[in-house]
Length: 408
Image 1 (tube, rainbow, N blue to C red):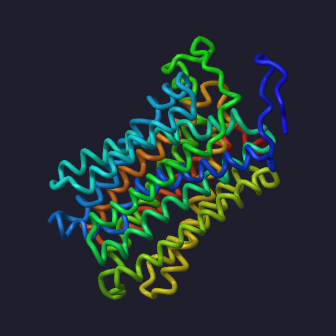
Image 2: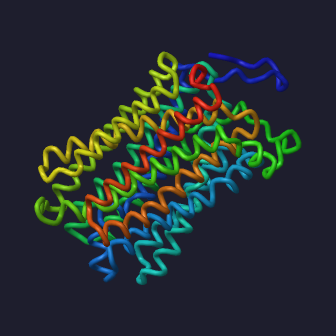
């Protein structure tokens, strides 16, 4: 295991196989469960929320958009705090505050009040994505940091799946408030596990004077090559959330007419993302980031096309492929941001997350308008157009800049 001889020596980072490396991955997996289970816990029960609070589907989906807007707005301030307080401390405060907001959501009576609490919960949750990748880059040896980041992304899919899958049968039996209460309790336990297991930071140096000012770091990372990567998160995440927001309404209606408990089983498709994110991380060095990114988007498009089918088995296959393609593309794009950042690395990751969750918020709402006005087919075609645009931007920039050959 690497050691450091004195306080001035650069910290080389924990290596794969060491106890601290395993603890880091375990702790961040717990943090991912706490964050993304709570963030998406209402998604699988939106029809129950719409019926109980007497709002339209697109209005109910605002419970997701409000939280992701809060998260998008929070990542940059959290990155600034994490530069000064330390990554671990920022992540601990983030998860604890968010969990308290999550418990408040389950008791608040009005839809408007719940929206405000969800926005605050998302704002608090911004601390994890703002600090996690920077923490990995500081604490893990560079030769293992890329794979660690891919494993972290895989872990976040477990959280997203947990929030969706567990909430549906509980809501069916006891109501949506009980479902979100259980998910929040799971988040509280995962937060506790994170706090107790995360290794003390060794690579972080709280020297604010040595760091770029926030606005300078943001400006440095708003180059064309970075904006293309940010657009991947904006468009592709927007498409994923749109599909998962409105597929429950689609599957409960004819010709599927599936029961909520059955639909909840389909949410295990998130496990495809757990596998594909790690797979994409392992293929980048051999094939290059651009090729792996485009291949992942192609899988997304193939899966989305199958979602137009009225056969349940075909729909399920499409959902698995769509989800796997998305998380592979996300893992590549997120890792590429860190590789391309020449300064303000923490802010670069936060900008990616800002665009990522802004896409979730905007398209989660906008595609609801499409769904209400024109139906499921129009919604899927909109998502496919977004994915084509994302791939087109990546290929166009690579050819324009001559970066295609150096995209690894």
